[in-house]
Image (cartoon, rainbow, N blue to C red; front, side, top):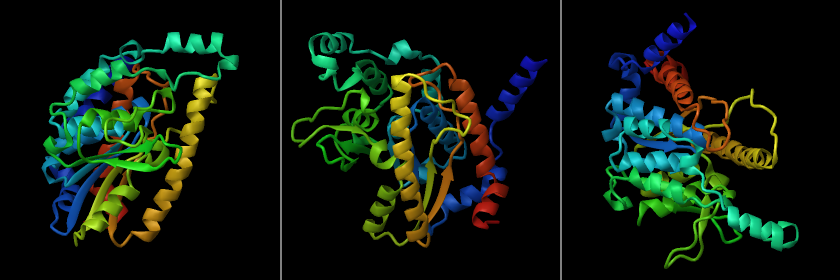
Length: 327
């Protein structure tokens, strides 16, 4: 009986949207006075699942063609970059459902052992525990075009400079794969992307400067001189209050980074709401998915369904009316 109920619930969540239930969102997104921008935040596997859930809904509501720009950080850069090249949400979901950690994790065993055995206290550990070659191949396979200029929607992704100054870098031209890898290279876990020809430095995880693109798309909109009000639909993944205490070096290290990212995000969100509320309508979506182990793909369907269910509720007419006073 429990299995039957679970299957019925999954079918309900995955059922096609009824357009009339989302007419308020459609009206806001297509109104002449609004400029629609979508921002996909970072958040490991939960971020991949949640961002795919959102773009799937946007596909079903036929809103993709109305998006002026799409921004992404880390997991959001992977999903956003792939989507703007023509890869569908269903294709992305099918790919990550078939993954396990062996498909994505290629540890630097030799470099780690050499450092620990030949250097005092591992003082010269490699820049990342994971080399990233497998991830790069998987991401590249999902890019139907290879450069920013060929994307069907103008795409931007955010990274952090690896030059000691931790500056925000917005990639908007050139090759997609190096930019996406830059945005997702979590310090100490995935080696920073080295500098390419013509660059002053390499780059790593954009979550350290803007976990969910917010300040950057607002600033770009204001610089553009566009008189329309910015309608920014953004995903953010901050885990859940039920998260378990960290155990082990890697888990503690990653949770510490996430805590720093969340502190900065809180400041950025406060600034956006106070300083730009007359110029920006912000629709922020956070499904509060319990954070899995890093590179854990064993709960993809569960996380996707939770995000889809959450977003379906928050984007319905009644929920938006409460949020914006829209009819």
